[in-house]
Length: 182
Image (cartoon, rainbow, N blue to C red; front, side, top):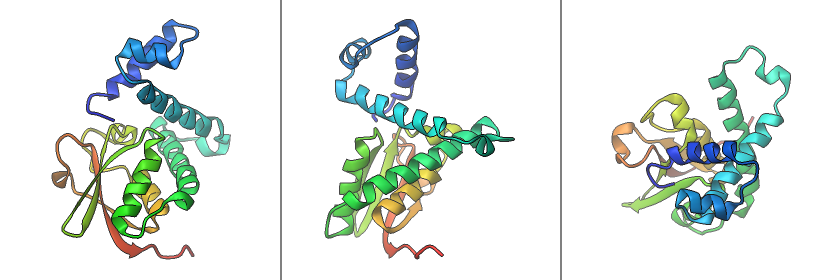
C-alpha cells in the first residue's frame, strides 16, 4: 500500500463505527480511494478476523496482546502460503517472485520487486506486523516465512540500512531451495 495508508485503516474503522452499513464504493468515495484499495483492506480484515475467531482458548491463555497478534499473523501467513504456493508460475526466480507478488497483492499485501545484478529483492509497505514490533523494524518474520513457503526457496531479511526510507520491510530472495521439513 502506498505510504501513509496506515492511517486509512483507522479512518475505515471510524466510518464503520459511525454507520451501521456502508458499501465499498461509498467507503472509497469518503476516503478518496479506489474501490479496489478498499476491497483489499476489507479482505485483509476478514482474513485476520477469521484467524482470530479460529483461535482456541489454549492458544491464547497467558499470552499478551502482542503475542496473540503474532500468532494470528503466523496462522494467516501459513494459510496464505498454502493457498498461493501451488499457483505461483515462472521459469526464473524473478518470474516466480513477480507471480507471488501479484497473488499476495489480492490480499492487500504490497511488495515491490527490485531485480538487478542477479539479486531479487522484495520491498514492502504498510505491513501491520512491523507496527507491532516498532517503527522501522527490519521486517516481519511471518511474511518472510510466508514468502519462503510460497516460493520454495530461502528468503532472507534485509538489514534496515538496506531498506529504502519509503518502505517498511525488505527481503532478499535466493535460489537456495528450502530444506525439507523433518
